[in-house]
Amino acid sequence: LLCSNIYILTIHFIYMKKVFMIHGLEGTPNGGWRSWLMNELQKIDIYACSLSMPNEVNPICDEWVEEINRVVNRNKEDEIYLIGHSLGVPTILHFLEKTDAKISGVILVSGPSKKIDIEKISHFVDKPLDFGTIQSNCKNFSVIHGEDDPVVPLGDAGFLSEKLNCDLVIVHEGKHLNGSAGFTQLPECLMELQTMFAK
Image 1 (cartoon, one colour):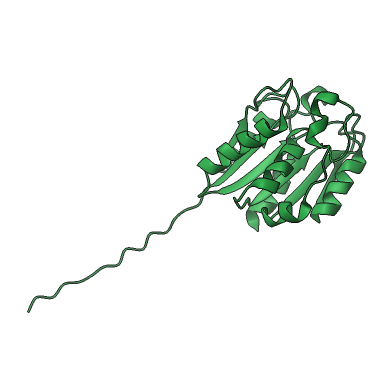
Image 2 (cartoon, one colour):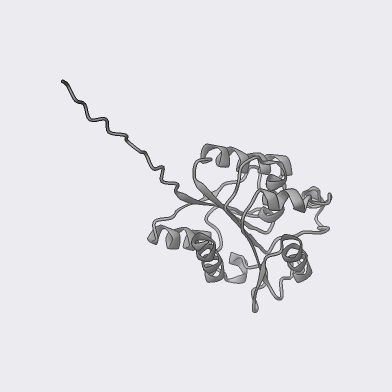
């Protein structure tokens, strides 16, 4: 009588947390606080990458959305977190309107939600957003904004936090929370991410 032991191998997939950052108009991947945040995330073994958006001087919304879509589709099996600064904010929101991916968390920093008085980027915010669809495609949101932002009014951040039913973190004397305003670090963003990671 021959006996054979059958072992059932159970494979547990380990989903990596991955953070992708989207800069604003005329921005660069490593500008402002993005390099600092990538380094801080690396210290806790979180993969982070700041995307180089196409044609950053004369951006086209559909091209920016497609760049996020391309990166997310390549990393679908992981926990994806998106961080947008300035024009990166409406870009992420338009992406969430169209994607079939489920995003784990989004942080929106200094982003416009209403009319912009810069003609070449007005098409990023000239149509109402479908916040129902946006919320269905992402589990967690947070909005961060400088209380004295000279580029995007604080009211835009209040509008987004209300529509997305999420926290609004106001940074005292934060201005536009970019390198020009002296922001080479943004601990508020790291804290919001860590809160999302723990959920």
